[in-house]
Length: 261
Image (cartoon, rainbow, N blue to C red; front, side, top):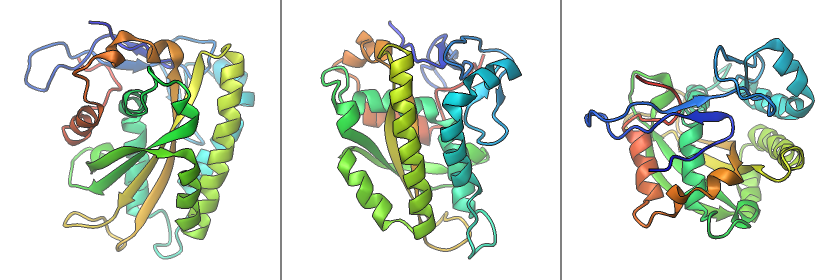
């Protein structure tokens, strides 16, 4: 079987299932510096907790490209909610969730938007994902899958308009930074590297809702992609059910992210 090759990630294998006894090697994050492929001794950016670097030298070399995204993501992370005198529990848990399931979202966006067949869909569509709180010992897994579907990029603005004022403004800033970083990534990689967009709706409702009352948390999630990955035959399999796979990754707590064996 051919395994996808995702930039920023080194694929060593794939999880066949929790009780299969099969391969348990998954993806290993690599340095966020586009010119570096090191995947050892990585540390997260202290400000945004999103980018990871193997050394201070790589972080410094990548700062010109990372700073706009860093500021936007940090603003989203640190935005205080006056009603709770701090970061709402649903926002904190969703922040951890998006970090944990980043690569699972990358797999889903490739198949869900039909990128192997229609490359232009990456600029025309985003992936809309709906989640609901659930109990789980892992802080990055306290949501369950509700639904996922493609949405027009133009519709993203509707979500920003419907969001609470501060949240919508912050996401709007992140969206602008994403577009800038997306173009820079394509330019630096000669068109090979790109970014897709996932819009996450987390409804704080149901029997396992977080403290803080009923609310809808909207999160904009940029997902790094490579056109080499998108062209991999793995994504052309007729039996590939991206929505079912994503639901399984989320509900069974099997994110594609780290070496497990």
